[in-house]
Structures are given as structure tokens and as C-alpha cells.
Length: 334
Image 1 (spheres, rainbow, N blue to C red):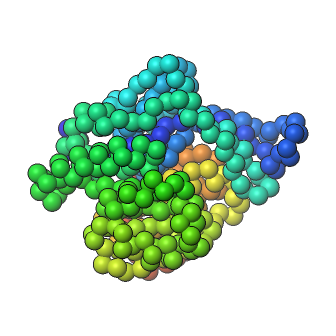
Image 2: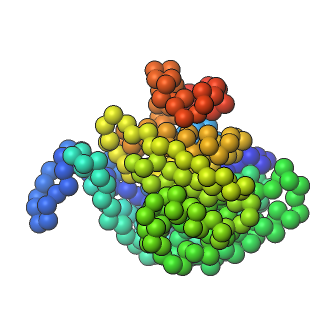
Image 3: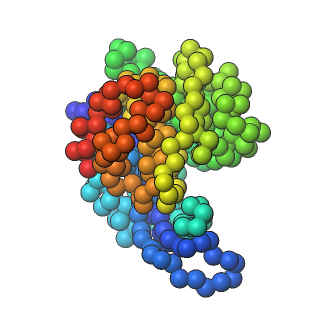
């Protein structure tokens, strides 16, 4: 039994990614520079990054039958991500995103179809042996009430456990939907997206954090990433922290940058880093991701950066030893 596993609960989708010189004009026929398929979905992407960082990781979500779902499972299997507890459905399709990446602006435009795949049910979560997990991350989806029940199950489990065996819960509020609001008070770590913050009327990450902190658990940590403006967070003691962004020399692929940031936060807190170092690390990791296609080799890129540009990785980290980020482990994890 591995009780150090991180469980990511949410969506796994098929991404069809077209790389173009610029975003196509409406009603035009253009030729992409290249096109590829990859697994996607917030929870799936977060699991991929965590696994690349060397963490034992499992994905839990709904899956259909068919070659698209087979492709996703094969990619998870190749990466060493567990998925044996997923719920399988027939007579529906695989969630699919058609993505256009613009080399001119670095933008990514997504058209997503759920394809009638049901969301995860409470009974799918109840069958888990929670002793296998140290952390459970919930992507906020349209089954919000069922997610709340799943968190109840974790809370009930934690009551019976000593402190060192309790499961940490993180929740992500990304989509601009009012129905996600109840999740705000249920996480030990709460991720607020730029889209959700703007939906609530906020114009900066620090305004978001200051305004929403009173709605979280007293012991919770909250974070809000804001693209090129970096990220802000607040500790359980009420300390505000900030990290600048770490943009790459050339922005290539921003698809999943937020999921990468979330994974960086989960990884760092899981390893016991301070919140300031955690947010710095997560912003650095997200910046590296924006300078490369996909997710494969993030850990190698981070390890290479540490040796080629020590000033970058120590910027705003008070010159702490980079070994605390387990860089030797990261270099061998992919």
C-alpha cells in the first residue's frame, strides 16, 4: 500500500492541437504548421505534471469506451499515472477539445465538447481506499454538489486518523460559474483562477485573495495566478505573498499553464516548502511550460535551468539551496 499518493479528481479529455502562424480569420481555409493529439483536462494535466516531478499520482474521473479513451489511458499508462478506479461509460463519447495555438501571439483558443460523458458520481468515490492517499485535488466541475459529498467523505476519514495520516484537500475554482462558490470553504488549499476572479468582479490577484479569504477555512491557504502578472497567495496566518511571473524567452504553448501552476503548488506544499517558496516555484514551473510544447520533460527542463541559469531559479527565493526542490529526483523522474 502506498499512502503517499496524490489523487487528482476531474476531467480527462482528448486535445487536438493545431499550431498555426496566427489565429485564423473567420471563414478562411488555413494550413496548420503541425497538429498533434494529447490527453488534456485540468485534473489530467495536473496529474501529468505531478508525475513528471516524480510524485506517485492517480487520476479519478469518468471515461468512455472507444479509441479516443484508449489513447488517453495509454498516455497515462506510459507516464506511470494510475487510473484503475475510473468510472467507465458506454453510449457516449470522449470529451474533446480542438485547440489552436498561435505562434504570433502565444494565445491558445479552445473549443470543447463534453460529448455526453457523465460526470463522476459519489459511488465512484466511495469505493476508494483512502488510506492510499496523502492528498486529494478536486477540479471544480458541474457536479459541484457531488464533489462536496466527496469532500465530506475525506473529512469523515480524517476524523479517524492521526495528524500525519490526514489527507490534504485542494479545490480549483476555474470556470466563471456561481455554482462553484460552495467549494471555496472546503479546501485546505484553494486555487482561484483569473477567470473566476474576474467573474466575481475582481481586477487583480491580490484584490481577489484579500476579498475571498474570509470565506475559506481558518486553516486554509489560497492562491490566485494571473498570467504575466504572476501570482498571489495568503497563508493560514493571514500573510500575503507574491511572486512575479517567469516568462520564457519565447511563449510557445500556454495550454495548461494554470494546471502546471497548480501542480507546482501541490508538489511544493506536499514536500513541506514555505508558501513563498511554493508560489515562486509554481510560477517558475508554469513559465518553463509556456516555453515548450506539451508537458513531457518539464522536470528535465527545470533541472537544466538550475545549472544554466542559477540566477533565474534563485530570484526571489532568498538564495535558498535549490536542493530543497529535489532537483536530483526531478532529473531522473521522466
